[in-house]
Image (cartoon, helix red, strand yellow):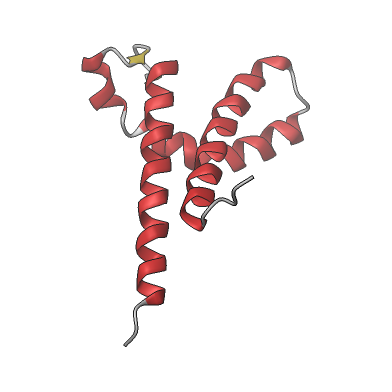
Length: 103
């Protein structure tokens, strides 16, 4: 099995973090213990905020739902996860190139 490059690992970790953050949000309906719910919400908050800021652009495309509190739909969330994973890949690639550059 081929080893993953550092940029691929960064993209995979980013995608996993965003997907798990959405899963954490869905798990709040399960009736978790309040301390566990607080901890999970603190861990998921940055990713959920980064997804929420795209809502005004996703709404005209039909990729967001909700009136008072809008959030991306599943296809919108998958699109944002792919976007942030691609950004992580590009950032890791650029960082590696800068580190390998000889001064």
